[in-house]
Length: 176
Image 1 (cartoon, rainbow, N blue to C red):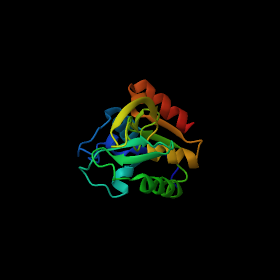
Image 2: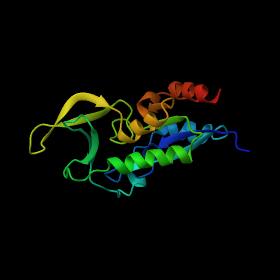
Image 3: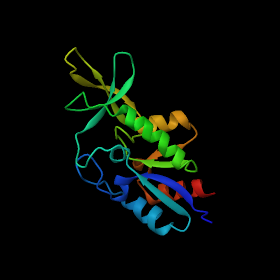
C-alpha cells in the first residue's frame, strides 16, 4: 500500500521541456527536496495541460482574454481563432477524476493554464481584436476549472517555494 502524499506539479518545474518555447523551468528546490530527499513520503505527479490537450512543443503562445460578455477564453496570441478553452476545461475535469486523491498542487506562475492569481488577463480593445493588458490578474484557465470543481484544493506557485525553509514548511503542512 502506498502511503505517500501525492502532489501534482507543473511538469516544466521538474525539468520537462513542455513549455511553449520548448524550454523547461526547472525549480531546483522542488526537484531536490520534493522529488529526491522526500520521495519516501511524497509522490509527485507531473502535468502539463497544454501538452495533454494536444498542443505541440514548441507551440504558439496562448493567453487569457476577457470577452465583452466577461467570459474568459484561452486564445492564441497571434491567432485569436485558436481557442483552447473547452479542451483545457475538459482536461481539468478528467485530471480531477483520475487523481481525485490529490489535494495539493504546485503550479507555474503567470501561466495561462497553470498560474494561480498571477496570470495576466487581456481584453479586446476594439473591433479589430487588438488587445491591451489590463492591470488585472487571475488564475490560469486549467487552475480556474480545477477550483470550480474542487474549491478546497491547496494550490501554490513555485514562487512561494523560493527558499528551502518555505519548501520544508509546505512539505510539513501537507504530510502531517
